[in-house]
Length: 175
Image (cartoon, rainbow, N blue to C red; front, side):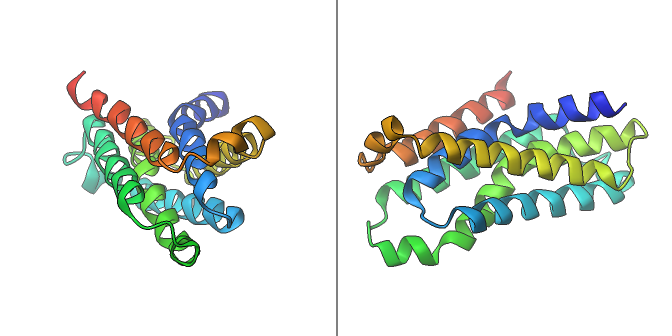
């Protein structure tokens, strides 16, 4: 059962890796970004975990693709906004919350399916949130390598990555 939970948490956290990578290229506050996204994912999973009966009839796995729309919107916003560093620093919390919601939808739905299967202990939302945090940290670590730092100077690359990630998530809606 724990193995199944860990595999599920890893599977729904892959998009957090790409999101962490992309956001860290344009944001200097790495720890608040990780904590904000992980906390958002945890809250979403905890709510779903303990409200399974209410959500069971209203959500499907296709709902996770809505996270794609949010990621595309964040990417477009980052693409067209100004490059003022103070704006970037001030928006760390809002970036973390919006991105956490976008990448956490599939985690919350995975939590829903686990809860429906009877795995609805307190450690399920914690496991999913921690896995998201680890994947974000791994994405941030990759973005700090010398080769990738050269790409960080290309201002449109991080938003394009978010838009592509969002488009990928939207494919789940049609498949």
